[in-house]
Length: 431
Image (cartoon, rainbow, N blue to C red; front, side, top):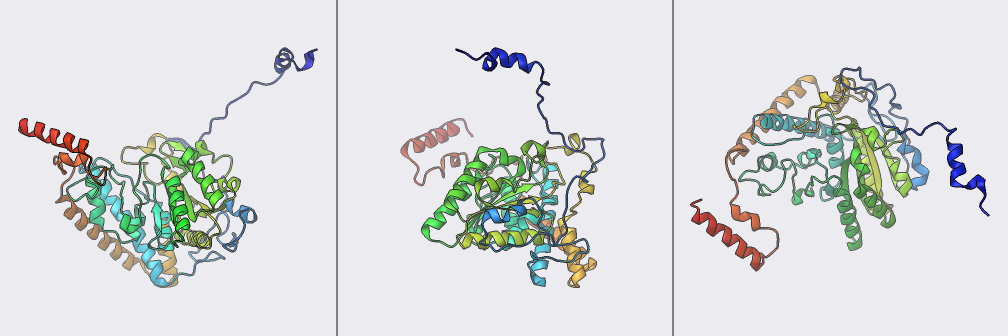
């Protein structure tokens, strides 16, 4: 016999007395024309976060996924347990690499506006994320970047002209125009080919790290994605494999507050931190001041040492801000307050390190101005050299038959036939 109190009809009747359900749609703190407000951010003191042993169990350090690892304080001093205590030459190398990255971005942005290339993406305000990590990793560790980590190549002294040739897809482009501008590939620099498909690099990095461990190698992998990309399935698949097999990999989430025009709340920022995603997978999680290059360095070195000791992967959230548009195709004034970039509470990563170096007595404003001038000239000279190899609109930079090349180690017979057929048709058409 059916109990009427548990029947569908009875439940429907009772539901009439309940308030209607509501769907929550995240809203950013400020839209265009409104005043930006970051007072809801909880920014702890620079010396607040404890530094655990690299072999610590993830469950024992879960609070680090909710705090903020910082080294540089408001007085430009390096403080706390995470202070890496780097020598002056390393600090100045960091400063120079970040400044060079910004100069490179400025020149290539201008080139796009001049019609010399179709597309570009700047990393303004996020330079510390790439530079700090690159200098903390070993030179032969493999990096699986997203599209805003050009600073890794620059920190590893990769030739600027090679990067520019790729942006222009010209005759000097080693990738033969097959990649969207800024999607570099430099195996010799430990820089895996960038993909336009979001977060495909995560499972690739985990797989590479697993292979390195299976071979008994000593190299680890590091990968980067934006906070919006943590909603992709590839992110979660990678976390599962990394956790289960304790892959020697560092998984970086660059939380720059915006995924194109969608603010971080659409990826879950209102509910918790992105570093907290590590907890559910049993992975060590760190949340880091992404505009503090010393904090980025310290966290990356901690995670690298942990991976090399076979203690497992680490997920690092870099809390930072995307100062410019998502790309040259984007206008950020259409979806966010114009005040945001100037009011970002964690400041500018280059200015912060510069002030730290000045406070130490190893740098000054005159030397910084001279460095900026020198780097602008270096980038200008590289651009002029690259442009001699061709720019957008100068016609085909690579022969059409190259369409069939580099797909197989040895071209199969049917591709050879298709290639020859194309060449014959071109010849008959007088092309």
